[in-house]
Image (tube, rainbow over all chains, first blue to last red; front, side, top):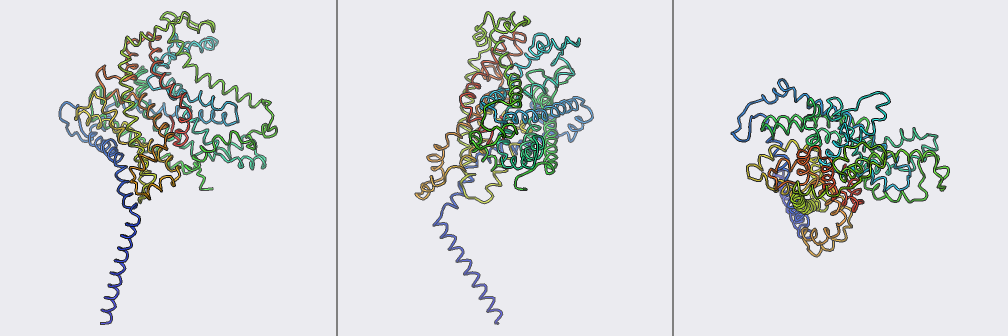
Length: 329
Length: 311
């Protein structure tokens, strides 16, 4: 009986608590209606992005996965073919392997060279040079050029007979009795030519590095100098650790971008001599919009997506060992 | 990391001007005030100069080639004087306009760009307002999801998006290039949010107490204060849209709908060896971008520095 009473009392107390809480919260709401309004407005305001992401992001990604198991030329109705697109890619289509190899080659040279180059320029600019703004402008200028214009200009520069590059190289090549390099018309030199062209646009990375370098606290340099560290050791032990996040960022985004090189290749050489500039996205584009093999192209897209995800994941995992974040200090 | 980035941006100019700031090189630390150039700095200037020439030469060569005659372009340049076009042929430019309906292309590109700018600024600033000011659980986590979508390769979504636009009959219209802009871009949302977080809250707390709605605060207080970031976002979406090639290539077919980039690319196939005309065409496509760049440079730098994104 006592027990029963007690439990009823407890129930009553809980009931009361609940009511007080409700009253309090409703009072809070009437005193500060912002909370509820904020919640409503938040979802209302970001709804464009949410809808856009579902329509142009998540939805299409799932759709392309489904499509990759189909055969479809857009004109007739699609048919389910299972994993045959993927099998064809691996076993029966040497061009896919070629495209992966070309893209890989380009990335391996263009991204590290570009990162190193932009870091080097940023470091030179960080030595208290005069006219910093002018230098910065000069180096950044090429990055505003569109891919098409870039391709047109560089095809002209790479022209074997009358292009500027060979005109400048010719005196040196004559010394060693070397022939004019054919650049974009040579299966060997076409990809290096793309790498050279990509180095023209290191200005974007340079600005990020410059900002990173300028945020290195001066007192660290002073302390290192007092400890007797020379310029090289100051770079190795002060500058480098602090800008590792910037290097990491530059490498990650650079790789994602260079895996998707398209415009320059499409305009400048197409597949190029002996398919030497058949880059991955170019091949994907040809399959989708020239041969209308939507299923196969979707499979290609998904393979690229998975490759990019794996590479990025590996980078993040490896980054734990070499990227230094300030909070850890 | 992000906080440091913002700080560095704010201190950008301070480091340059501060008299106590010591140079990194020992040479400068020993003679802090003297303007005598050390051998070290001379080397730096020499290297920088070489690099800058490398950056500029393609532009100069393009400008030169766009002003010469067809046979001048084939001649070898023996001396520096041969690089100067003589006689100059400015008629290359009108010729390009005649051959390729460049006016039409220019109009199309301008129309698309203006619509995209409008859509991006409106939708992204509204989203960013929500991420900056609305007090909601998991707000920042959702924001990081928005940022993560920037890393999605566009190629993966390309084919289904094309199919959808084809089904609703939007191929060969400007809609596929314009409408997505009204759904906000993660990059622009990020820029807006970073700026909004720096605005003093007192400015609109008063409006809130007076019962102004979020929409009203966004429209009448926050947006008018955000001119610098609006310009930054406008520049970057201008550049992205003006220079876009893949989108127009896929969604536009007929010649009267072509954009400038499409026009230039097909011009390349049309007059393969008329390099003087091709270079004149590139100049025409490039000039507006260069003008915008030179006029609004500091907004460029701000945009890149706050986001850490390459242009």
